[in-house]
Length: 342
Image (cartoon, rainbow, N blue to C red; front, side):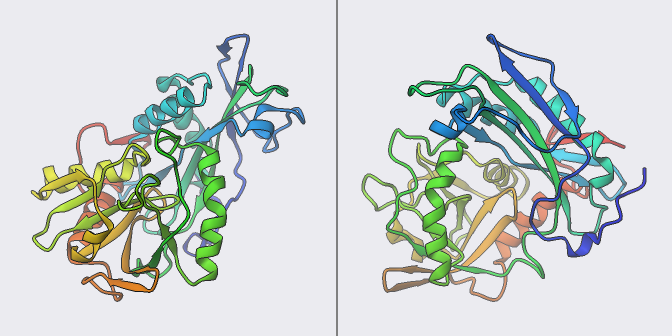
């Protein structure tokens, strides 16, 4: 299979239409079988539920080419389960989890020529999403839905390596207690757009959101979970009902405990404790881990001891181990790497 003629090494992190995408429809209380289509445009009613009441959710994962030429993706079953949770919270019909994984495999296979070659630093980003598609004018759930998957080749999130970033403690709230912070709803990201644009204007890479109830505990950023490393080498992650359960974070916690022999804690993390950590980072699908060098808190500066030059040693070991598993260089737990082709 011949790859597309693309300058893989210089790809940015953006959308590029590929040959095929998957689409399934929910109507009269049931999902159809779904199919691949070459049509990249979506046509729906002007009064569709997604336009009126933001009834939509999505997922994000990647397909890779391994060193031995296989095309694989990482833990798609967890994306299926998380989307099911999002759908239940938004009163949307669950797309069956086994069908979700099958659709991911089918879509990636159909676009195999777009999966970047091993060593290029690029990957195939996979975006499953669902939305209310029929006309809804009263405030209620839609009755019809579309589930779709698009894929697009993307370059590495960081050109030239993951250099530590500077973030700020924000006055904006990301999610309310008992709200929708724990699901991957489009509305959560819409709420974060003003805050991130404002942060960028002020020279910051990201916002650190605190819990909305007391504004004393660390939660997450607009699109990633926090991880911290203590001075004695322990991995600590914030615990909250408002935090999105990151697949990358859960995988890093397993790697830390079961493969690297580290102690792992998931607990509430007071903002006042952050200055005591040796290393800090953000974790998510796009970059795996983004190291943090400094946090500005309303005129106070929290300098992370690992510094602004490079990723801290423990964070780097976590990063290299997880990426090694994803790329097939390191043997990971059974079922983590799903072989799609090869």
